[in-house]
Length: 167
Image (cartoon, rainbow, N blue to C red):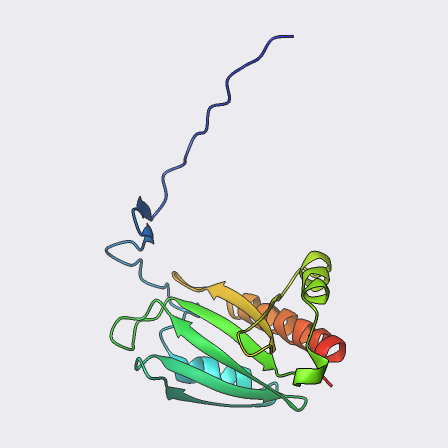
C-alpha cells in the first residue's frame, strides 16, 4: 500500500490568522445598496418586531442590543464586531431558559439537542440555565429574503427549544 502525504492548503481569506485568532480585515467591504447588514439597529429592530415585539438599546459596552419577544418567549439580538458602538458586522440571537435547583437540565439533553438540530446551538450557563444561540455574519450584507429566512429558522429553533426545555 502506498501512503501519500496529506498536504493542507489554506485558502487566502479576508482575515489573517494571528496569535489571538482571526483578525478582521483592516478595511471592511462596504455593503451594497439594497442589502441588510448589522450597521442599522433600528432597521433590524423593525424586521424583528414584525414577528412579535422588539426595541433596541445600548449595552454596557455601548453596542446595540435588541430586546424581543415572540409568542411569549423573550430573546435578544446582540451586536458584535462593532467599532465604538457602531458599524457592527455580526449578530447573535440568544435566549435563556432558567431552571430551578431541583430541576437542573442534564448536559446529555443539551448534547442531544446539538446533535439533532441544524439551527441553534444549546449550552448551559454558569447558573444552570439552558441557553440557545445562533450567530450570523452580516459583513458585506445579505438580502432581505436571506435575513427573513434566517430569522424564521431562529424562531423555529426557539419554539422547539422552548417546548423541549422550558417549564
